[in-house]
Length: 234
Picture 1 (cartoon, rainbow, N blue to C red):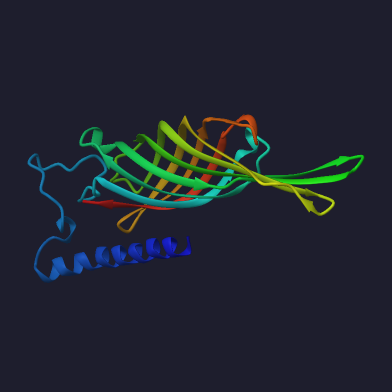
Picture 2 (cartoon, helix red, strand yellow; picture 1 turned 120 degrees about the vertical axis):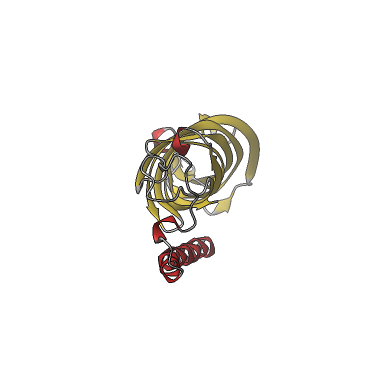
């Protein structure tokens, strides 16, 4: 995880350095720095909010944050992280994006039950790997310095549960169970353009069935908050 964040920060620093160097190169060449690397529009007008160049249509992102399943189940908060790839479609000032992402989180819970014969201690762990396909819709064109976006789509969950515990120091046998479930997601986010992409904060609501005997017939419902960076690539 630290390596992934270091890579994102390093690439961001390189992009910022290149962006700052472009106007100087243009002045040395006697050109207008405002049009370096951008295409001329036949009508002479740039898209709405365009300061001179539309960011690239290919979107690559990485994020890290926390998962909060307490709204739906008794599982506890844990780390969550993911990666994404998207493509902004060439209409409506590129406000509409098709996206594909992958994310992982291992929420958990522990408990103690008191009986006449003693205390029973147990722990339940749940590994959740998901893949999402859907759309993202931005309030402003990508050329604006900030944006608000809404994402919605389908989500495939690959789920694994396992439990273990002990009574009076004597361990129980470990039980494992896994399944694949189809669900959905809805996400609300904010972006701020910086360097070759944008910093973002997303709130993601994901849901699918979780009919495991270990967990009971519950759900994967959760709210996930993540902070990350999206690169805009030509």
